[in-house]
Length: 449
Image 1 (cartoon, rainbow, N blue to C red):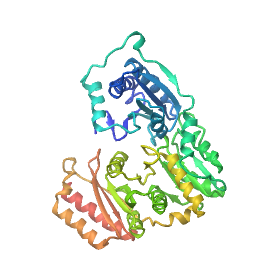
Image 2: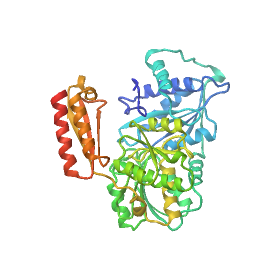
Image 3: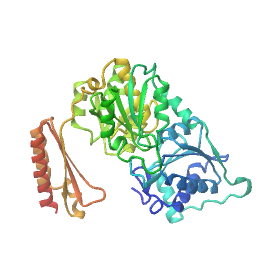
Image 4: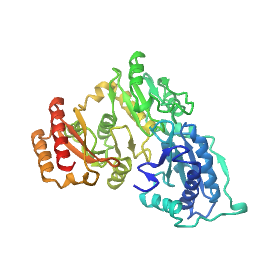
């Protein structure tokens, strides 16, 4: 990735790594790059999650946008996918979200969307980086009437709630739903949308104070929701992350329904209705093998990508596929939005429950999650990519694949930041795959240490 931009925008500890100065420069360079072709004063939508540092970064970012001659339109606390939607609805020239997603409160981030609601390409991010770090292009300083201004989109939350609610037909009356808002960006809109559709809603972690976002709650800490869902006899529990671009579910028994299972449930319903292009779901290499087995048994095709929602979306656009995502609950449904949308995904899941009349546990039983073991092999940093060419390691992996015979798999990949090779083995027997993972780790360390 680039020097500033990572896999999901610019991210770091607020006020030390992601400073006000950097936010100003990102606003200024971003406005210039994303809106330089317009013949009007460019309009850029700015949303944020509930972190305390959001105020500081928002003001610096907006100052940068205005200094480049663009209008900054503030949407306030709003999920990331809401910005992607609102950019399209109101024909903004770009959108920006101030959020560090599922990370702890001390982190923050800045990510851009283009005028079509898509995250930026590597090339555009590289151009913004080059302006900030290398002065590759000179950003003009407009004067007088050409200096940018700010305004507020008062209807942002209401617009997004209406949009999300209209992605399903009918209502959700008769369902009792627990929601964990992670004290994040969806703390208002998610309960509003689900109540609007007639469900009984019980909400936890919807009192953000700027410091409690994702703290022991939300999709990264699901235990509280599991207990709450069972204790209150709810039909389903929904857990969002800090910026609500992902969602995980809990069934009526408190069992986790992860992104793979959610995609399976929604995908099969779309197939049944003839709405699933080529009967295909896009997933990453980290999806559980049980997902592949479910697909084989139900006439679905799975297209695999490397880890990261940008690669999922890339493959979806390439094949015009409808649904794709990750085990983490970051799911894109292209008929509705251009990025992962936790609320829209949750509503599609609830719609399947309501229409089928089935409990979530029954729907989720279409897929069996196979045991998985993850181990790290510590190796020389200069050699961590050489496992691909080592004949002994390759033969060991092939031997294991032959043993599994489609009922297990081996996945090896180098860490992006540490001198490690990560070994993941899946199979039906936990003890067996644990033993084989330990053997493979030792072999990799002996060969590449």
